[in-house]
Length: 107
Ligand SMILES: [Zn+2]
Image (cartoon, rainbow, N blue to C red; front, side):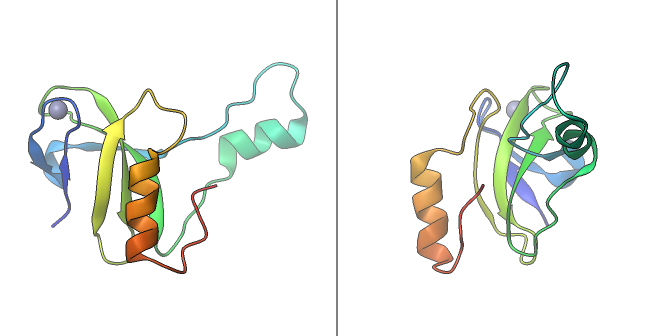
């Protein structure tokens, strides 16, 4: 079972208490961008077998959005952090690299 610890209220929530919001850390393109950039923003998503950064909402709890790093193959959750960050925390990246030495990074 997939469980996350909400970084806001500290509750360990099961997947049924959460709403998935897709890939985290998308770079948004709007007016003035090229067609290729805007198309990539709208339609191109990573779908890795392994470490993935995602948006989740604690829908049946505090209601806030947060970000999480997990392994899509094993469902291991590496950590969660507030949604107002532009990149994963350094200590989370270090923990993932420690567990997955061949991992190439989040970008
Ligand atoms: Zn919460």
